[in-house]
Image: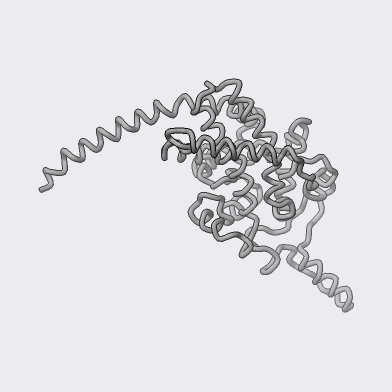
Length: 314
């Protein structure tokens, strides 16, 4: 979602947005002189790719956040992140992913991080916080203009919208991390999953139908990217209180019991988000190797028990 400061995202007098098809029907009725009442202002088959799940509704915003032009430093930043990932894969003994355990943890945590941020910025109180106002307008106007604020922006612009949160992640890793290979790995994995994965997953959750590349459909079906029905059919139903994760949806089953449109309080949400943003990389990098050692020990014991029990079966 956008973070611009244009008037398009300002809250205004509630209006009702009509789909292009409904507008056309109304124009045709007026032209023919018929007094035809269009009873449904919702999208119908052919208007959108997910017509049954997203429908027009009363709005608080005049439009989505304006699409600001990308800058050269966005491209430089993306190139540096890609180069760092490739260098880690080539030079590290365990590669970029290190282990299946760490990869699974980061896929879950990366989605959970976006859920906490998303839940906080969906609150109307954030509109009153100057530093959060632009991002909050982007998230909240997105509920009312879901396609204009995703497909209308384009996937590259949405990726570039994550630039500032990526800078916060890198700066926090430099301040509180151990400056080891694991620090770099966890930091980069968070960028790849939360920032790039969140932008791409969310874009294609709205990015519809046959226009989605085959690899996207495969990853959505496997829940490695956010499936449209999970997001549109869950979070985009008023009051928008579930399924806040926008990478793959892995964390939603757990977090739906804790996060909704009213609780926790906005102060609590912002404190949690700030804590995670500052210290998550430093905490995870310190826990990876001890956790893997515990899993290896427990796994060895279980395997030993299974081997010892197997001969008794024969």
